[in-house]
Every structure is written in structure tokens, then in C-alpha cells.
Image (cartoon, rainbow, N blue to C red; front, side, top):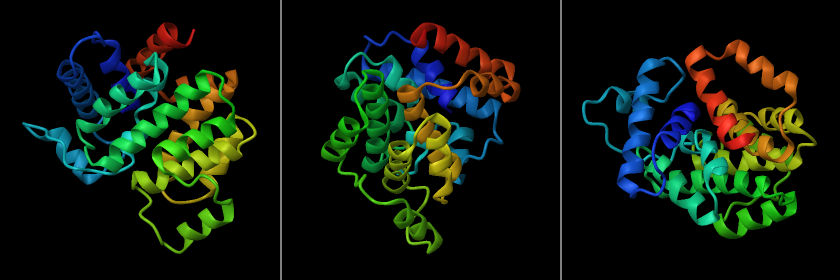
Length: 231
């Protein structure tokens, strides 16, 4: 779905109206979701993908934040970050918390690209989106061990992933730290990794290894995106 959002944004004029951009994103999500139906989607999202008339379903699940990273690279301002992140989320995850998770993640990526330091990113995210990014690691791990939170909710996994990023010493360490918390680790790892990429960069050996796993059509989206926005 990260590739789908990137594809949808690359194939539309971002100066056009919101509905045109939303339709490009929706069509890309449906195209790639249907092409790869066994990618671990939640039940409601699977139903959304196969629907004849897919509609947003008020989800605050963390998929909106997991897939939003392209926005942080494409947007030219914080206002554009918020606009595009909301459009990418609300095709399915139109609950406020689902949109907020996408806003916050894309904002952190944008700020990292602009060379903000970790304290600036932390303070801005806390002030603008109300996430508590000051909790310690053991507090987070205990929460998941006790089952005291919904691990797939944006309002849970997004701040946890951001804490993992803030604690990380490099790209790999940030992801490993986040995964060590427990919970919905594929998603929190992806959210943390998307911010850590913009802040630290990705070591070449890890970047190259990804292409051993990616199918050719998805790899082409990644390469096209990198050439256009990350070169």
C-alpha cells in the first residue's frame, strides 16, 4: 500500500482539486491491493478492496500511517503535507484518529527531510498532534505484554513507532528498537522506518537487499519514486 500511495501521487497533477487526487489514490490502492490480495490486510480493508463501490469505513487503524510515507517526500510545505496525507487516509481510514496518524507520520518525515533535529520533531509532533512521545521503552513493552491497548489503532502505534525512531541511533537500530516493543510490529516498524529513512538514510546493503524481496512491478514504483523525489 505504500507503493500504491506513491503510485497514485506520481500519476496525478497535485495542483488539481482534492477529489481528482483522491480518485487517483483510490484507483492505485484498488489496483495494487487487488493485485496483491494476500499482503496481511485487515478484514475490513480486504472487504473494501473487493467491493464494487468501495467507501471509507471510519477506520482509525494504523494502515493510514503505514502507507503515507510518499507524502512526506512529495509535499513542498507543511500545509501540503496535511492536505495530501488526509487525502491518502480518508479513501478508507476517514476516522479523525486515522487521518491524524497519517498527518503526524508524514509531518515527521517532512521535518526530517528539512534537517530538523529529533527534539524539534518530537516537540512539534507533541504540540500539533497531542501524542506523548516522552514515555520510556519499558512502559511501552509492559503495555503490550498486558494487552492494555489496541495495537492496530493509529493513536497507539503511531506514537510508539515515533518513540522508537527517537530512541534509535541509526536506521536499523530505530526499527529494531520499535519491533522490540511488541504489538503490531510490521506496522510500527514500517512507520518508524519511514521516518528513520528521512532522518538517517538507509544503508546501501539494506536498501539493495529489499529488491531481492520486492516483485518487479513494485520495485519499479520504488525506483521511479526515488529517481523523481529522492535523488
